[in-house]
Image 1 (cartoon, each protein chain N blue to C red):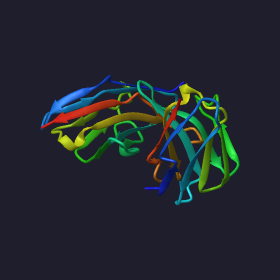
Image 2: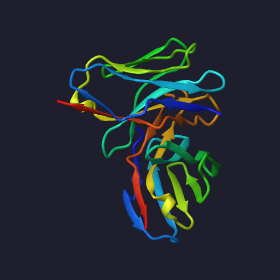
Image 3: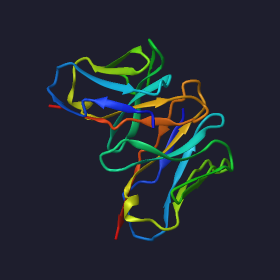
Length: 113
Length: 113
C-alpha cells in the first residue's frame, strides 16, 4: 500500500537558518505530492503541491521538487522565521477515484529568535 | 477555503457513551473525509464520503460510523466511546481535480475519560 516517511522531529532552528525536512514515499502509479502545514491550535493548510515528476511546488518561500527517481519530495526554505513554527506533513494522493490522502507522521518545527 | 466548520470544538465524555461529531461545509464539495490525529501517527483516515449517502471505510474505521444525508453535512459517530478514541478529529473536503486539494476544518478535540 501507499506510505509516506518523513524525518522525525522535533526540529529546532534559529531564525534565518536553512530548513530541510525530508520526505520519501511508496506508491503505485503516479501520485500527486503535498506538503501541509498545521499552526498551533489550527487545522491543516495546503502549503504546496506537485502533480508530476520534476515539478517544483513553491509557496511562502518554501519549495519542494517531485523526484521520481528517488521517490522523494523534500521541503526546503532558505531562511526560516519564527512565524514558520508549526507541524509540517508530507502527503500523497495515489490517484484513486476517491482522492484519499496518505500522510506522514508530521515534523514539528520550532524557530527561535 | 471550503467554509468548513466542526462542532463541537471540544468535548469531554465518559467511556461507553455515544458521541456524534458534525462537519458542515458551505462550498458544495462532493467528497468529505474524517481523520484522527494522534502523536506519532500523523493523520489517519477513518471514513470518507463520495456523495450523499455514499460512504466507505478508511484505515481506522473500527468503532466509528458515519452518515451523510445532505451534501453539506458529514457526521461521525462513536457508538460507544473508549479511551483509545481520545484524539483530535479533523474533517476535510475535496472538490475535484481542478484544485486537487483537500481542505481541512479546525478540528474537534475529544477526550474520553
